[in-house]
Amino acid sequence: MIEVLKNILPKEINNKIILCLLDSSNWKIAKDLRNNQELLLNDLLGQSGKDSGFFVRTFDEKENIYIHSPLNLYAEIIYEIVKQHTKYKFLKPTRFNWNYYNSSSQATPHTDNNEGYYVSFVYNLNTNNGGTNINDEFYKSNVGEAILFPSNFTHSSVSQTDTKGRFNLNCVIELQRSIS
Image 1: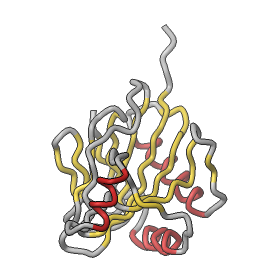
Image 2 (image 1 turned 180 degrees about the horizontal axis):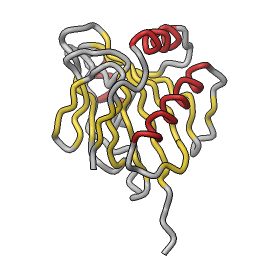
Image 3 (image 1 turned 120 degrees about the horizontal axis):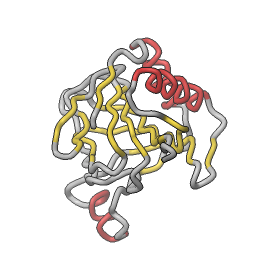
C-alpha cells in the first residue's frame, strides 16, 4: 500500500534543511546498482555524463552510522510527524539518506530492504517536475510531501527538467510485528 502525506513541514523549514545539507561535507556519489567500476567511470566521465545522484547518509543502524548533525534531528521530526499520520505501525527508523539529484541524474531501480516488515518514505524538500517511480507509478516531487511504500517495492528517482536540483530524504523504517 502506497500512502501520500502532505504538508509535513512548511517550505521555510525545508529551505533551512537544504541550507544545512549544503554545508554537509559527507556527500557521496550514489552508485545504486552500478557496482561495476568501469561502467560507473564511463557514466561519470564518458559522453553521457550521467550519475545516480548524490547522498549523505546520516544514520544507518545496520552499518553503525550516526553523524552528529542537525540533519538527524530534522529527520527524526519528519519521521515522528509521518508516524502520527500513517496507517503503518512504525517500530523505529533504521536509515536516513538525504539525496540530491541534478538534472542529468539517472537512478537505477532498486529496493531499500527486501524483508517484509520494512517501509520506506521519500520526503520531498522542494517542488519540481521530477519525482519518484514506485512500481512503475510516478509520484511528482511536491515540497513537504512524504510518499510511503513497502521497502521491497522497486523504486527510483526521476530527474527533474524545470530546476537544477532536487532534494529529498529517504527513510527506512522497521515495522511492528504482530504477535500471533
